[in-house]
Length: 324
Image 1 (tube, helix red, strand yellow):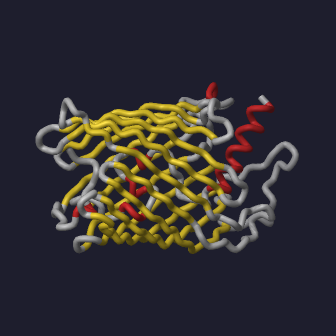
Image 2 (image 1 turned 180 degrees about the vertical axis):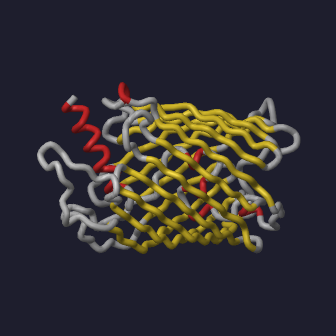
């Protein structure tokens, strides 16, 4: 039991530090919404896309992390896109809310070979708060320290930059999040000030030779924290089936691991989604593959969304790969 308590404390501590390193990324981007991980995807596609995500981590563990987020992006003119991201994250007695404003410019590198380059920039505003309402005494200190008053909070400003290269049905996105160092606040003396982290997202949409309505999409997502060198990778696979009127469904799976522990996965699980008459729904389940596996039922995520205000672009550089 002592080992379990120590393990939960360590993970919660690391998650608390990571809150301001990046928006919590699980498998939201696999719900056909790559804008989650990069501003470069803003405006790719023919619609205004709105996606809402609800994520509950480690169901069964008290005060486990919980997250809600909303993403919207659309194209302006033929080659530009803008986007908005909102999120609310709870982890024990810490609360974080954030907003991102994104802009992307899409360029044609070579029209004949279908090579495109997209550049993106996001401005981030994060608010971090310690909620003291649930503070309780312990056996060693039965009363809460009277010097702890008010919900202590601090706000931070930062930027993300990214580049997306596409060649036919192949894509590679490179991103840097929180490129500015953060001022240390007064909560703790061990809070990280270097919040820079890097992500790479790559994949290929394979169109079936036997059925033009079927696609296969292997992909990988890599994240590296510049402050301490920690890194993780997701390996993903999706099967997508279209109908004749652009509706579709998909099923897939994701495998997440630390890069120095390939055969010891952090999370493993299935996922599925459906698009019907511009309404979208997806569900993802992640099994916890560590010492906490016997104390929770995994991580659950639901995505709902809608596409509307359809308008075709005159530039192929904003054409989405999620079409047959």
